[in-house]
Amino acid sequence: MLAWLISVLFLKIMDIMESKKIFILAGEESGDIRGAELIENLLAVSPDLQIDAVGGRRMKKAGGRILYDMTEFAVVGFVEVLRHYPDFRRLMSDIVGIIRKGNYDAVVLIDYPGFNLRLAKKIRPMGTRIIYYISPQVWAWGQKRIKEIARLVDRMIVLFDFEENVYRPCGLDTVFVGHPMVDMVAAYRPNDLRKQFSIAENVSVVGFLPGSRMKEVEKILPSMLDAYDIYRDSTGPYKMRFLVSAAREDLKDKIEELVRQRNAAGEIIVYPGNVSDILFSSDIVVVASGTATLQTCLYEKPMVVVYRVAFLTWAIAKMLVKIPYIGMVNVVLGEKKIPELVQKDLTGGRILQEVVRYIQDPGWREDIVGALQKIKARLGQGGAAKKAAGAVSEFLNKNRKKTVEGS
Image 1 (cartoon, rainbow, N blue to C red):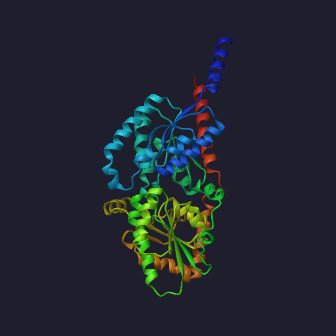
Image 2 (image 1 turned 90 degrees about the vertical axis):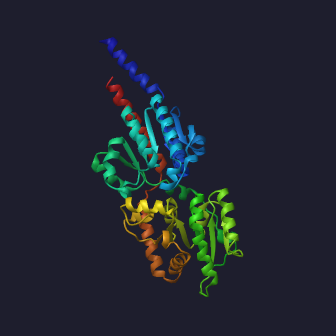
Image 3 (image 1 turned 60 degrees about the vertical axis):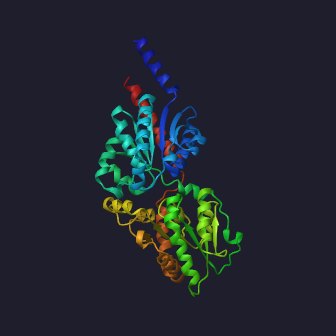
């Protein structure tokens, strides 16, 4: 009896001392940012945690052992994915092999649902424990996928409070942590570009955020610049200056080339610095649909959400998407309140019309700011990355305890 107790105690001690090992997969630039935050917070409380990862330079700097740089595979749209299908298929096969041999305590999948949900289907039969951080947008693509995700995933960590009600009825362990953008905005001290570029108080500053990918910029920025052309040729009583965000160095060159073609004479400023500087300094923002709409919301700036993709991509999306709006601000709010200009509606004339409405109609502007404040309140109180790391750590410890008790 004593020998048995000693052996059980030894197993428990060895289990506590043994380093845990996880695998994290993040796609695209945004996933690399979220993954890096997660890794930093995990290692802060568990320095011995071994983390193998598919991600990017930020996750590597944070302490992950990068096996593949997933940011090299970042594409947008159905058509673009089809072109790269052979590359994705090879990558999928390699990652499944790594996970099969890795004996990980858990696999953490971050966003990137087109790839990650397929991966989950392949590794689930191996008995792999799966945590999903940043929910697939099943509320947009159809309810029938929710039950399937609940069968594949052990714990879902979500950024929006309404997502708890999406998964919990299916019995999926769901943890709401809030949006990491709340901390990013709170921590950053933006530069006042009005002062930097000597913009007078009676001038309305319009921020143009055309996206963080070259394809987005090529499809969206020309319509934004068309709005400038119409403004320049008009005889309206309002004065404007325009700040264009260049999210990366390669985008800066392209954006400057497009701006030069408009003979803007200093009225359009291409700004390669932190986008928060533009948001802080702008009166109105024209922003490509995506996470940047939430960042704009956190600054409570009236906005126009815009987007354009390849025609075939849009046609397929229209058949699949089940909600009547694309901007995350409208999704969180639950109604189409913030103006959206998509595909054929994205014209310079329509952009300028919405911008001028904010200038000329203070009641409308105040109404939109009130809606943005409601959205802002639903994004959490901060500490999302730390809470997400806590949810991962708690899951690892809980499941390790169950394994020991069953031995």
